[in-house]
Length: 379
Image (tube, rainbow, N blue to C red; front, side):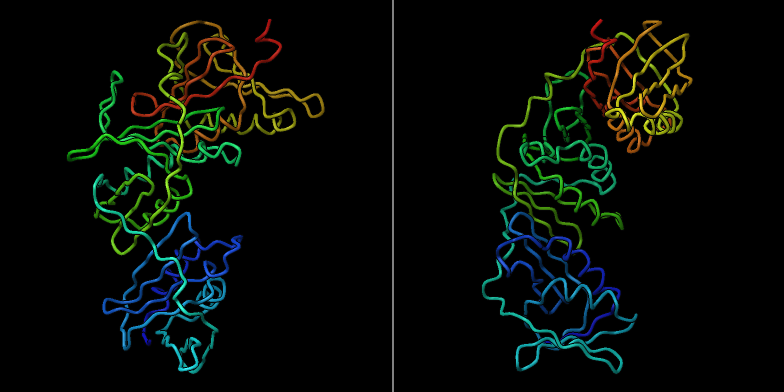
């Protein structure tokens, strides 16, 4: 095996697959990167048994072959190489020689025989989607998943394809995420015939695909779904992930049908006010009270040990002249950070009812946040 390639190409590929490599597994072999030279270039593969990634890089291949190289070692070396052409070859003794200019690394390697190959699934339930639509949908939902291992099903994002019976919902692709305290749902429309599908995709897989798409072009992302796995193909990159098996909560039951009061505010101003209030709220379980008085929104936080804050935000209001409800301020700032719209709409229906935050004038996105029951709410 011998190949010549540019350092920048090699670094990009190694960096991508190295993120997949597991550092906590009891199976040492998956701590390696599968390095293969083929006619069309270098193929790098990593597999942590939950998710796998293949990246093909341009290269001048002198001799085809394959070898396993420790991921941490390879990534560390490549990140420090100068911007020049790199020669990589497997020696007669089985080690890997990395040569550039007048310098050389020799790395111990392993046979590829026991490395778990990435599964390929038949193209049955396949869709194509633009990178921008996909990354926007992931950005506005994946942050709401649970990070608790006790809520494994909620570690994933519900991916639905096909039409929905909901009124005013014309989407044929939806993503939904919840951690039990909040829920984010977004809908999108993609071209072509779309079969009815409902699967739970690990948030880690969706976020990894989003990273791959950061340098996106005009080419569509191709998604293929089977009963147990989902694959993502974009240009020379292929990612496969196991699906989370189980029953996702019926999110339709928590979608409010109406609200007593609706507020429209500048998204940036609202976010900045909430972040300032969070400085005080951080000492009191992150609780802030949203109070409407005389057409103004007050974001109030009180901490007996620190002090208090009353942030006032200008809003346009429809509905009740007075209202108050308490929330975890972190759940408010999280969603405002991922919304691209200039205006945000807040909807409330009393101190013990869920609140809604969404981009003003848009129906395809909704964020539901559970209230915190306070003394004021109970009275």
